Image (spheres, rainbow, N blue to C red):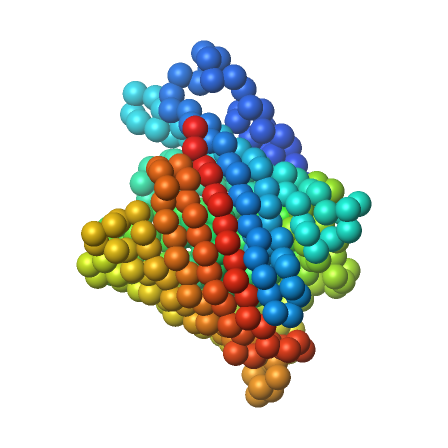
Length: 351
C-alpha cells in the first residue's frame, strides 16, 4: 500500500494527541466519581534491574528494561447489556544507566488506549498499544527479562494509532494502522505502520497465528515519551514482513516460537525464536525458562546475525512481588564481540 495514501489520513493521526488527553482524563479521574461506577483497578509498579556483563562490566538495565517506578490504571464501563468500553493507562518514570545524568531520566507511556466494543466480533482500539504482529500482542512482556522478537523486528513494542479486533467462531483477528513512531507521537518522512494477525483463540492450549506487516518505520535511540526520544535518522525504513507464531501448553511446560521474514528497505531480514517455560509442579511459584533468539539484519552475511541463548528463572515471593535472574550468552553479535551477561531483577506490581 503506497505511503502517500496514508498522508490523506494525517489529520486523523493528529487527533491521537487529543485522544491521549482524553484517556489520561478518564484514567486519572478519582475512583469515587459517580462517572465511574464500574470496575476500576489501580496498580503501583516498581522495577529494579542490574547485573554484570563481561563486555560492559556492571550494567543497570537490559536491552528492553530499565529501573523504573510507575502505575497502571485500568477501567471498565458497562451498561445493561454488559461492558462496552475499556481504558488503560500505564506510565513509568525510568532511569537509563547508559545515558549521562542529563538524559538518563524519562517518562515512558506504555499503555494509553481506549477499547470500544461493538460486539464480540468487532472492537475498536485507539491510542498506544501493541502492533498486531507476532507473539508480542499475545503476551505480557513489559516486565520480563526474556523478550519476543518485537524490538529487533519492528524496533518498538507499542505504537500510536487505531485498530480493529475481535473473536469469531474459529479464530481471533487483530489489525492496526499506526504512526510507525514507537514511544513518541510524531510522523516523519511519511511514516506509518500497518499490521494484521489472524490466529486461533487464546483460550486453547495450542495457539498459532499468521501475521503481516507493511510500513515506513522510524528508528529511535531510546525508549522515552517525555522528553521525546531521539531519532537515529529523519528517514523512515520501509519494512515488509510475514510472520508465524505459536504457543503450546503441555502439562507444566509452555512452548513458544515465532519467526519473521521480510525486508528492511532492500535488505532481506530473518528472525526466529524458540522458548520453553517450565513451572515446577511441587513449587508453582517457581519457573525456569530457556530461550534461543536470532535476528539476521542482512541475509547472506554471517556477520549481520545476532544470536542469543538465555537461561532464566523466576520466583514469586507473593502475588505482587517477583524475583528474576537470567544468564545469556551471545553466540554472535553483529559488529561487537561476544558477551556473557547475568541480570537480576526485583519486580513489584500490586494495588
